[in-house]
Image 1 (cartoon, rainbow, N blue to C red):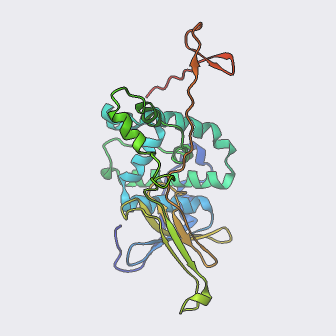
Image 2 (image 1 turned 90 degrees about the vertical axis):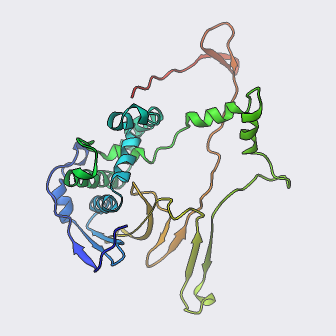
Amino acid sequence: MRSRSLIAAFVLAVIGREAATQEPNDVAELARRVEVRRTAFGVPHIKAKDLRAAAYALAYVQLEDYGPRVAIGLVRARGEMGRWFGRDSMDSDFSAKREYSLAVERYADIDQLTRDVYEGFAAGVNRYIQLHPDEFSPGFAPQFTGYDVAARDVSAVSAAQARRFLARFEPDGQRGQRQLADVAPSPEGGDVIEDGSNAWAFAPSRTKSGRAILLRNPHLAWTAGYYEAHVTVAGVLDFYGDFRIGGPFGVIGGFNRHLGWATTNNAPDLDEIYALDVDPSVPDHFLFNGTSLPVQREMVTV
């Protein structure tokens, strides 16, 4: 993070336009609704009139500090790595395209305030790229929308998960044994826990200062993508803590005047895999509860 020698106040004075999903709030109007102050250590304090303007500024300062990392994350979520960076970058595009389609399909179901955040963040990224083209590949102008930011928050079953499951049944046993070892029970009979998180909260009656103390350790590396910031929207939001680089909703922990909280870093089992019998009488069909059903095919083009 780039530091500042003094606390510098500036208003993001910009002109231009947002993507269609962000009308009628043009970029100049968004800039007028937000102020950003950085401390001597570079920590941004964002004070905005609404969530859309706050997200706009949050995106802009993230790109000031991490540049292409934020933009490439949105390109990856859109499933366009191959388009912008060539065939050797396109492997993730196939699964990302499916998740992006789901984000677009469900976008209208998201409440308006959340859509405001997604669209404001996209506008901030677009404006930074427009003003700093030399930090990106020649011709790089993806014009992000709220869909792209929302797609970062979509999680679906990956082909890698299926491959890991199938590897357990390989006849040579070696690779399969490695995969089985990942979920092998401990000698005590419980599951193996390799990492986790912890936090301690101390009431004011237990501290010398007479103030509450929250101590947390999420067991993530310093390079895991934290982004320290303070975002305030009067009457709506007051948050100081760590976002994740690349988006507005990846919050690890933080506090305000009234409360503080921590999160847990773990790996919950969110998917299940079932073995079904092939229908021997009909090609590309399987049997489920005695009924023959067709295998569903989906073509994904990148």
